[in-house]
Amino acid sequence: MAHPEPRPVTVHAAQRLAGRIRVPGDKSISHRSLMLSALAVGESRVEGLLEGEDVLATAAAMRAMGATIERGGDAIWRINGVGVGGLLQPQAALDMGNSGTSTRLLMGLVASHPITATFTGDASLSGRPMKRVIDPLSAMGADITASPGGRLPLMVRGLCPAVPIEYELPVTSAQVKSAVLLAGLNTPGITRVIEPVATRDHSERMLAGFGATITVEPGARGRIISITGEAELKPQTIVVPGDPSSAAFWMVAATIVPGSDVVIENVGLNSTRAGLVTALRLMGADIEELDPRTVGGEPVADLRVRHAALSGIEVPHDLAPSMIDEYPALFVAAAFAQGRTVARGADELRVKESDRIAVMKAALEANGVVTIEHEDGLSIDGTGGDPIPGGATVASSLDHRIAMGMVVAGLHAANPIAIDDASPVATSFPTFFDLLADLGGSVTWG
Ligand code: S3P
Image (cartoon, rainbow, N blue to C red; front, side, top):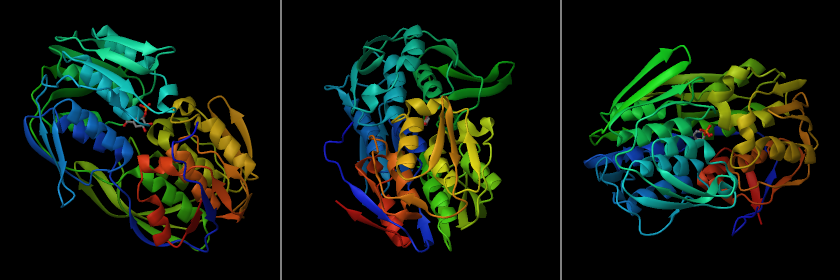
């Protein structure tokens, strides 16, 4: 899979990383802030929005369905919404780029509006499974025509009024949960999702913040989330905390490069997202939480991370949902630990922007790291803190987190590591290479 304009990059080993950096806004919260603002009547303001390609795809889609979305010179985004039920028929296909979150959540919104939308995406997104959202949204009455295998391009013809359902998630996925809840916003009655394993809860928090009637209760089969439609959303002012999934790369980088001392400011530490901090601490990482506070209703702290020796661990399976996007970073940390790290129970990694188990195995092995592939994860034998051999070129496979993970690996390698295409980094972390330079790392382009 190739990007239309690949950006090859070579990473050089770093002496030490030091300084203070601020990671961009949380991707999950940024998507939801645009979607819900676009459904509120009146002006919402969003500060700290992630201005990455994925979130901009959501903004473009919400504009195409009638919302007014503008970025002020003060970097505050102002959104005038159309009201729940007020989405307009888009005049052209919605191009979702690389973004699974945009696709699945917006399919939910369209499903209960009297409109039809076609969703397209890049080669990575066009290979990802959509049956997981097609099934519940079809049960609510949407008519969905997908490409073979339940993939993009696909067309959603919404039903209005849609039919409320009770849906027990067959996959551990915040995107599927959110798609059903968002469809429930414009569906008369109570739409219910039962979540056997808890996943990130940003949708529930933000829907409540916008004034929707939503309840979350424990039940015998898991968390029961009930939303009452047709909802009326009130405009809000939102401050987006920094993305823990972006901070993850710097947590690992500072831990593995000897002599490092880095402060990562404004990191969201919602417990449904902070699994990597727990896993790295179990391995021996030195991560200090400074100035814990609340930003936009989410727990946030500055993280001071200093170089530390790591030991291989068996990563507890129950951490998987709260660090599902962090496995590429974790695999890199494991490559520098003493002994073997076993990271299993994460079969969802097979259907992310790439097959993150197979692609990370190939990338690490090409650079001299011994790994064992499992259906649901990887085992990795670490160097005990020495540099990995390096010296190979890896394929990022249209996956931002593979590219960033292998850049971090290259910061402590005996020979430079090259990435065939770093352009996917712009989907979630446009300032990644600037921050690397701020901390004292260096790369060569081309
Ligand atoms: C996300 C949910 C997760 C995650 C993705 C963002 C979200 O996907 O991997 O990066 O914002 O809801 P799944 O729901 O497929 O696990």
